Amino acid sequence: MLLLFWSIERRQRSGLFSDPSSIASLSTLFHHPEVVRDFQNLDPDASKADMEVLLEKKRYRLGYYTHMDGSERHGIVPAVKEPKSPQQLRRKRTLRVTNTFQALNTSGLRIPGTAIGHRVSKAEDRPISVKKREIYHAGRDCFLGGITVATLIIIVWHYLNSNQNAFERWLNNGKHFGPRVFFSILGVLIYSQWKRLERDICILQPFRALNLGAPLAERSILIERTLSPFTTLFVSIRRKRVYCTLAALDGVLAEILIITLSGIPFNDGQLFTAFCVSVYLSISILSFMLLTLLAVFLRPGELKLPHTPNTIGSVLSYLCASITLKDFAGLSTLNNKMKSRRIKDMGRRYTFDVLRDGDGVMRWTIDYDRDDREA
Image 1 (cartoon, rainbow, N blue to C red):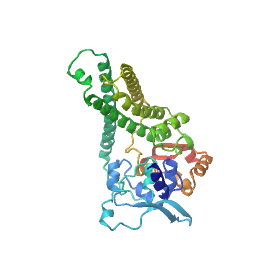
Image 2: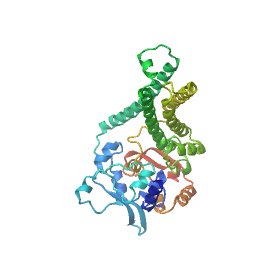
Image 3: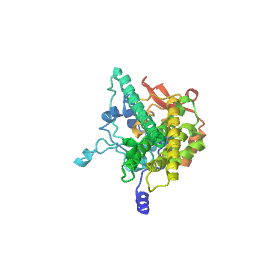
Image 4: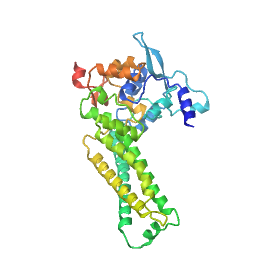
């Protein structure tokens, strides 16, 4: 089965010359004047839902076009032909990038039904939209913290409590699988939430680095997205990214937690030593998760963005006013190694902050550091 999937994957053409998961790689594909203007026309504070509404009639693909200077360039271009079949019309909320869905989605950037339009968001609605988003994300993190604390309390209480109440008798009943299913569900919930949090932390890591300082390209825009907590863990350790390392380690431990939790309800067919090992491991993992979650809550420099940069459209909205687009326009046909070398040789530093674009609009923008822009 794995060989079959590998064979199918090898035969599919992505239309890309390098991995598009880094900020720099997407920037090299984003230079067509019409596409750039479409994203510049978006309200800077538009949420992801607003973008889906504003851009739903726009369609894009990967291809070549002739620039006004006569050079042939490769990147994201407007789709000329509109779909005519009802099946295609029902998929109008999908960003149409020909032959790139699987390549871009597999690289960790979801392809949204984003759309492009005019600035229609009201100024008085912007703080409310950002605040709702912050409340939503805080609620998800609080849910993760609450279910982690609750699971830890249940395990400690079950291990230390000697009173035979109804709940304790139910947990100690080895004749049915109810207690094991209960703890397995708790483990799956914790795993799914940690996987989500680990993904969000790693996606925001290069943006946080750009906002907190003016790092070089290899520490910011050239950071590629990894898909598995295992690979993220080793990459983060090598790059000395503390929060990504902790989140990836918790993601790995969350998978182990599912196994250890299923061994906690003691029954007659189980060794008491195995039960104790499951309890001690579960308590240790959950305690470490709570400490990591506390560190994430207290970390400095939290970004208050209008939308999370976890989709292609979201990242492009932070690049549409960047000066880097002109310098990176001819690099889209290079492979990863050559592209990284060319960008590193520029020796520029980068930032992510609220900057004024050419139209006088203040927006979150990934650009050169101020000293490099003025040079």
